[in-house]
Length: 235
Image (cartoon, rainbow, N blue to C red; front, side, top):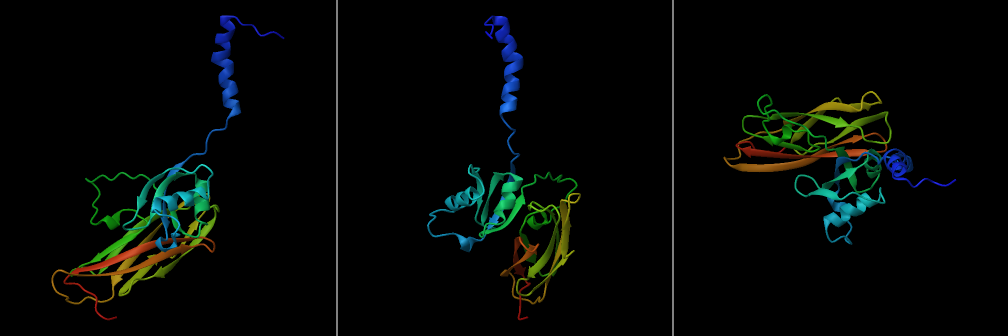
């Protein structure tokens, strides 16, 4: 059958028929979100001259079209941020060099109603603890989201306490489900020894906690410092 070539038909085709053909021929892309990926610094192969090259190879392991690395972290933690789908984030947890994959959920803080005493009050995947001469106990709360492939998951905590620090986590078990995709916990750091070490003195100690479900392990590093007149003595 001959197709009319009148201007009226062409306008009808472009306005009504062509958009339908375009919509039916392509699927909407998967939704990408920003994730922060924490990796083991010692796992970097020598063949990579820069960390960014290594990070790009890690992302390529879960996607044939990897997203551009948004930012590389080298101070408090070693890792990077990238735009990933939820499935890609779950696959990254299986990479031997990856310690944790956390969504970078934007948060707004009203400075008029919120009092952030230290950077440790922010919902970061790591912990920065400072003991002074007048405080030997520090408490933080964290909210975490399950991005694993299993909707129903149970993670139990394993504590690697820094020397001279007692660490307690409550609850010690996080239960996720279709209805409960996020969970919260409180972590308490207690200095095991406080003695006068002289004004201006500083000592540090390091450890971590790990949330384990039997397959995945999500690690959060801990950095502790004693400042001013508060210094660690023998245990």
